[in-house]
Length: 286
Image (cartoon, rainbow, N blue to C red; front, side, top):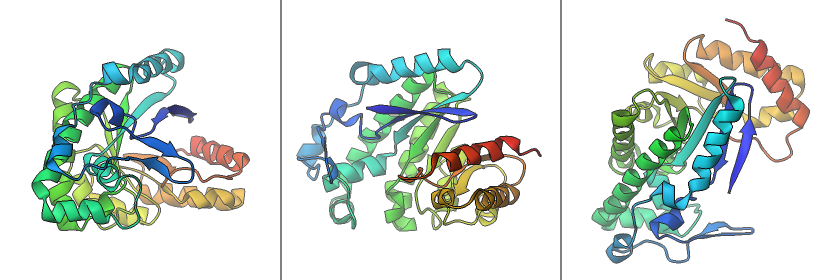
């Protein structure tokens, strides 16, 4: 399943980050009221050994077809973006059996049987690097990596169970697609910002819990930033929305900033306020 979102300078093909799982021999269902459910969680060496390398050409040819059609349609009027899940986040779903509030099972595996988890993370790393290349070969001009659950890790554990695999993905993609911009997003990442930059990505996406000026300072001048207006702001008045946009842009500076929300648009957001966000953004001049 995928959805198309068109912005004034980007066309984004949204596909669930778990879409590759069936192609890796990890079946799952989307259950109403629960979200993704993996009925046979991966918690043993034997289960991890059954995980296959993902071959996107075989399992998700429609993603490549959709990206190609988008490139033909938008031409050079907008950038086409793809995205993938990061190894630790994908592993979290697969070990927990779905979404989680406390991540007990993956932490139990990480701290009691780390070799098993590292083997699983390596399989996701190889597969997601290939998936990024596949998207780039079919029209994606940038790819965002979502490590949604990495912020459940302490800084030390992030350095063991997430960062090395993010680096591997970046290095692998750089070998074949050196000019492809890579964006990294991890919700609630204030405690990990500097470490996110160590992954080697081109852009770090900030959520609204980080002050943009502080985030910019902490990340340094070699990393671009994306974000980070609170999605809830779009429930405010147009004047309030404009004020927050200008504040974010001012703090980010006039180089290396992709103006965006700090997360997805909330259900029930007034469409006219979304339109106003883009109108204001398009009118900004440096």
